[in-house]
Amino acid sequence: MSGMTRETVTRVIDKLQKSGEIAILKNKVIRLTPDFCREFKCSI
Image 1 (cartoon, rainbow, N blue to C red):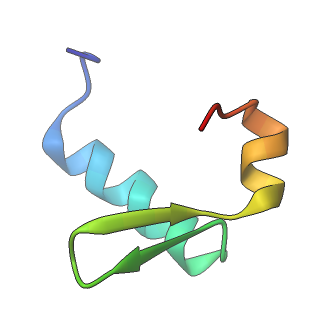
Image 2: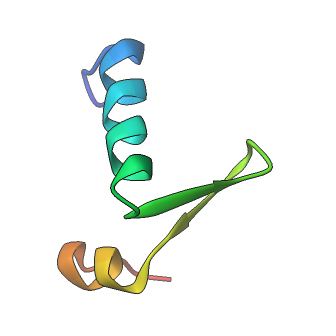
């Protein structure tokens, strides 16, 4: 739906995880940091 390949999505998620912007819990849940949410205006 986004037009990105699986490889690109994996690469972006890995980069965000290594920078500490997101955390992947039990290989299922992606936890966003408060700073990430403020920057990208996440809604919960």
